[in-house]
Image (tube, rainbow, N blue to C red; front, side, top):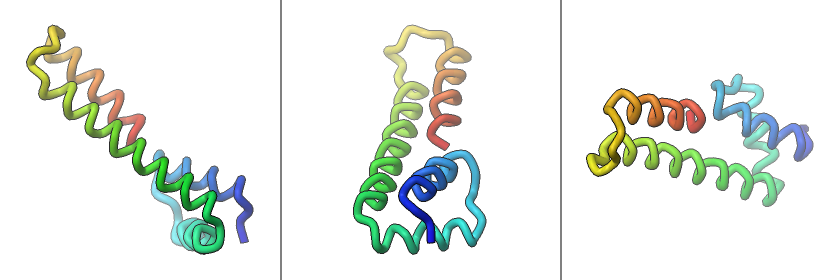
Length: 83
């Protein structure tokens, strides 16, 4: 069974890559018994969603006085952090 430190590290890694089925199983098992790690996981997902929304707003906002290529580069950078 994973401890909290290992669980939060895997949750963070899941933003960069897909976890193996064993890692996902271990994380989910830990989340069933640990309300703090479950809360951490939920907060990470909220931040990821918010970053994706910001990226979409930057791309679609015509009031931002930046060249389209620059807006797209900023949005892609934010998306890569969020994904």
